Amino acid sequence: MTKESSTVTVSKGDIVHVEYNAYIAESGMLFDTTNADKAKEAEIFNENLTYKPLPLLVGGGRVFPGLDEALAEAKVGELTTVEIPPEKAAGARDPKLVENIALREFFRQEIRPEIGMEVNIKNRVGTVVTVTNRMVRVDFNRRFAGSALKYEFTVLDKVEGDEAKVMAICEMDYGTTEGFRATVADGKVVLYLPDVCKYDQKWLLTKYKIVADLREVFGAVTVELVEEYLKKEDKPAEEAPAVPADEKAPEEL
Image 1 (cartoon, one colour):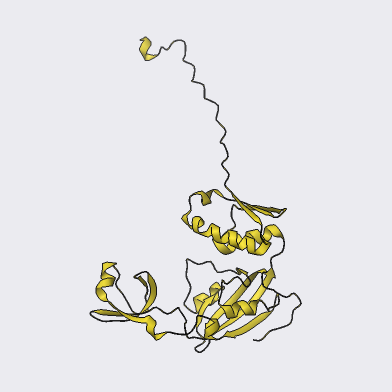
Image 2 (cartoon, rainbow, N blue to C red):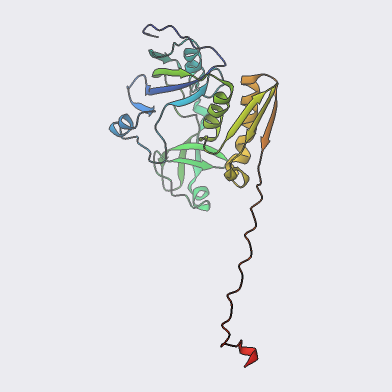
């Protein structure tokens, strides 16, 4: 691991913003990045993704263990390069997880398998290796299993301040801070939710992770998630227009 010098260190439990480039160590192939230009250059750009520094809870298990360890030893503002062995990345490759599956199983799910396609078959996610007239060979190993990985990363900042940390956790887990408000006082975190959370299925799954992360960062605290329902003011009734004296209502004709 190579570093340049800095003074502000990072520790486990810190929330930081990180920019990085990730490569397969042996081939040098870029497979992930926070930089849109690099993604386009490597032809891995995904228009559904937002390319920007990533908020991370150091030691929170959101990234490969080897990268988590390197982050916990990093310094703010410095460029760090680390090579991660397979056992601290996606793990060793298991030949038993490469299986032959009947082609008809794919047709039943209306899937036309192609080499390199990621598929969900029989409630497992794998990558298609080969396709024949009757069988499809699928690799159910984790992506990059058996490969050493190389990361070049820079910790841009450490998030300071209780409310800023709450917002960073919302961004990290839910993908946005828009509409959220928070207060932290007397061992209690109160998170006010935007209207979208009232009907968003993603929120229903994410909120438990947010609560767990808030407790990890702030200790064993009470967490309140508040939905606000504001009463709309009643509009005054509009008065009916006056009928001119020389005109009569239809029923009076």
